[in-house]
Length: 146
Image 1 (tube, rainbow, N blue to C red):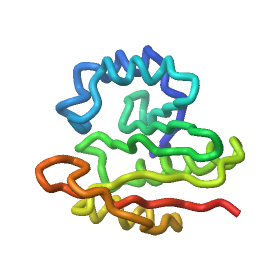
Image 2 (cartoon, rainbow, N blue to C red):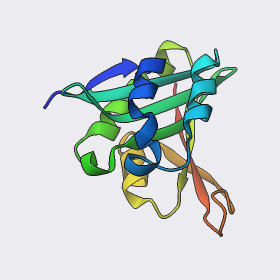
Image 3 (cartoon, helix red, strand yellow):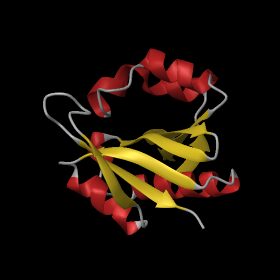
């Protein structure tokens, strides 16, 4: 199984438009992604297996810092290393842009994601209370580059 990572384009987005809420997460809508693809400070990537999009990720560059906006894999394809491949692409991209750090928020109950970020040396640096609403907090995790 080969996971191919490509820059996300509008045709990719159209391919998953009807599945965004059911097969991925329900936080990001088609219209949000459409605007993000036009943002010169944002960059998105898709993970593809056998011609089918199985995951996506994005970043937002602010000065010399890069914020991970999301890393999402298709529900039926989780625990197959897709998120790791996407994260590796983001780390590589951040380094190529001479970023000083790569940061994100993760739901404090998402232990699988937290373990993934720790595997790549992200450090817990803070907490955003009620970030996801309904008393769901976010842990701020950051990877600092030398």
